[in-house]
Image 1 (tube, rainbow, N blue to C red):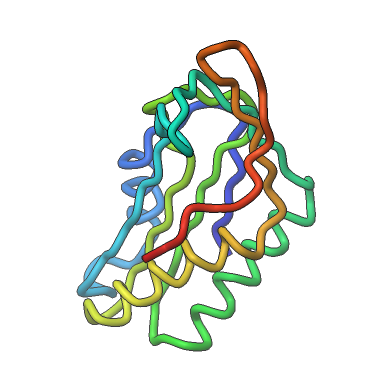
Image 2 (image 1 turned 135 degrees about the vertical axis):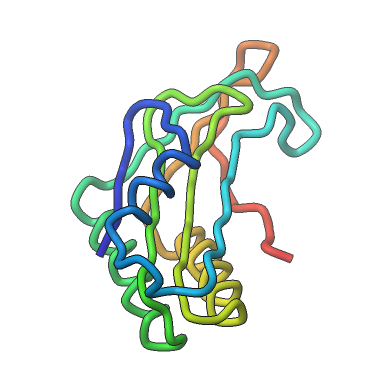
Length: 145
């Protein structure tokens, strides 16, 4: 199950294309993807950076379980999750989720599921650096509505 944790910046479009190139030509009819990037404002405060930590080994295992669960719920051919850790700046990609399927409904639904499930299940911790130089831990994720 393709799960990658990246300590350095990544190009989500290149990552998607590289993985897609490993799939059999013509084997899917739909691709749905989501790219999450770091915002420069959170909870009304200016944010200039973030340190994203994870529980090595456990995080990857949980992300693989999320993909497995998506494959049980929808007829998808493949999925990819790429997630950043370490020091992140506003505008940089944090997460990429991609799903390949025969049809768009399964691709859309499974891609959203991957994103929402990883936000609630995978052990990641975010510590923001605010414009005034102070730091704070992010206590909750943005709702997925």
